[in-house]
Each structure stands twice: as C-alpha cells, then as structure tokens.
Length: 79
Image (cartoon, rainbow, N blue to C red; front, side, top):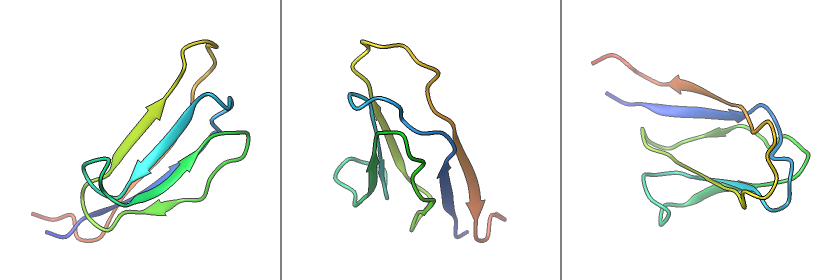
C-alpha cells in the first residue's frame, strides 16, 4: 500500500533556542524538509514515503506552551 503524510505545524516555535527539524525519512541522514524556529508558522510538507522523522530540540531554559502539529495520511491507506 502506498502511503505518505501531510504535516502542518499549527503553532510557531517561539524561542530561538528551540527548533523543530522535519526529515523526509526515518533518520537524520534523510533529506531535510525544513528546520524551524521563531514566531511564524511554517508551510505544510508532504512526505515522499510512509516515514518521517520529527526532531524537536530545546535548551530547557524557558518553559512555554510548546507547539502543535497536524498529521494527515495521504494516498492509498488500504491494506
């Protein structure tokens, strides 16, 4: 079955010492779809397969509300 994912970040990553990196595959050696921090909401991304790696890096210095991400499967999801 073919399967991919549409990822949309719904809230910004507020502090410059925190970041969110999205990879188009299961590891950090996969192609990077984007790396985000700051006050603006990044664009949506569609993966090329059924695997993505989402890496959130925080310094732990400031505690905030975090972020929200939306995930939607695309393609043929039947088995």
